[in-house]
Length: 113
Image 1 (cartoon, rainbow, N blue to C red):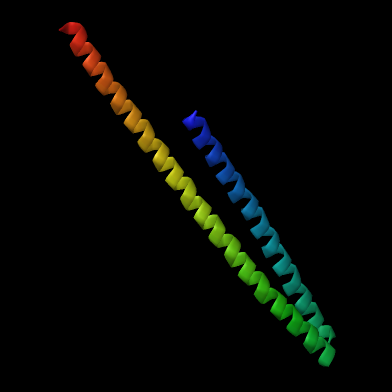
Image 2 (cartoon, helix red, strand yellow; image 1 turned 135 degrees about the horizontal axis):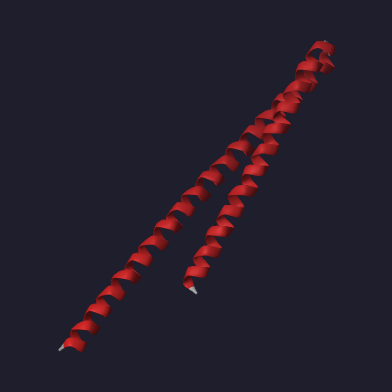
């Protein structure tokens, strides 16, 4: 049962990483689109309204950069959690194998005594 729970947790962690990667990719795509739009508008808008709109886009991009960094940090943390889960599961399996070997050795010794 514990193995299934660990596998389920690992799967949920992987699903979280995949969802965050998709979100990050969409943020990157949106930022590229806005950058392209800024370049087009830069050549079209010359007055104060163009400058104000350019500033708005710059501020929007700053906020998106913060969100993107936070998403990337979450991806890194979940990746670390996944590795920790794998190490914990491997250690548990080793412990079970050692306990089984010890039990078998005791059983064999009693049987041969």
